[in-house]
Length: 340
Image 1 (cartoon, rainbow, N blue to C red):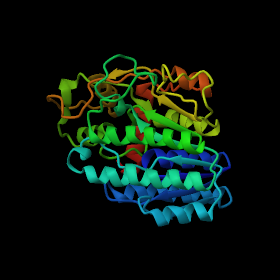
Image 2: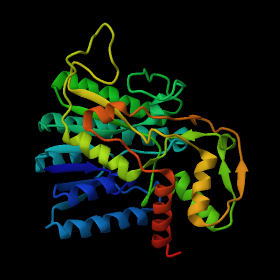
Image 3: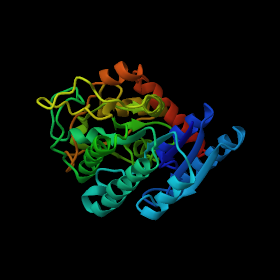
Image 4: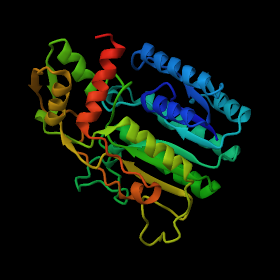
């Protein structure tokens, strides 16, 4: 297939594009390559994709473009006929949204509108896009299910991703565009973002600097290894969303519709306490950390736990990489990448 992967220089986008290339698909990757974090890391990811693409006979094309620019997105869709679109480009980060909300409007709302319009006008068979577990917000009933309501986000980032889900449904309903939204749960692994906890903790511990454990380290997170995420993304993209024939307007199911629309959780289904996550990092590094216990930060969700039964039932896949195994792989990559 010919697949558009947006955010291809990003953490999950890079891994997704590489996996698709390795299985023989033709990939057009798009990324604006902003400086939200170290640009050299994004460029290193792209170099690796260039290498994989060369081995696969040049089935890789990269376009540096801002998806918030309508004309640029229109040109991308006009120049290619995509069998699938996997939209992973977004302004990420919970705390950044507290001080820079306009970044999220441009990257998460305006850009997504342009992608939806591109898919609509060029009859793309299936759009798969990234959402987040953060949409569960003030919900406390665990595990989080796609069939729960999610109308109480705790940060603007989550609000924009929930808006994406609603926007996708409108296009699925109005234009019969098949869409699948994927709620990612705390993704980690090699080539990860430098602003994420695992990267920050490993860097600090190796430098003999203290690490900050917010909520006194009592967070529970459904840490999900990136390879598991990517497998779920690709399987979900391959299986085109259909309308749910049993959907009822009297008791509307938030996860499906009478339109070709669906939402899946992708999580490890095995939440781990933050202090236990740090234990796993220490074991991988062979070195103890200096821990500073701090209060809960504004906008943070104390706990997350994914119900992934719908993912299993629909695409036949259950994320399952143990945290220690995933952390070990990240530490090995980190040492190699930074020549430590």
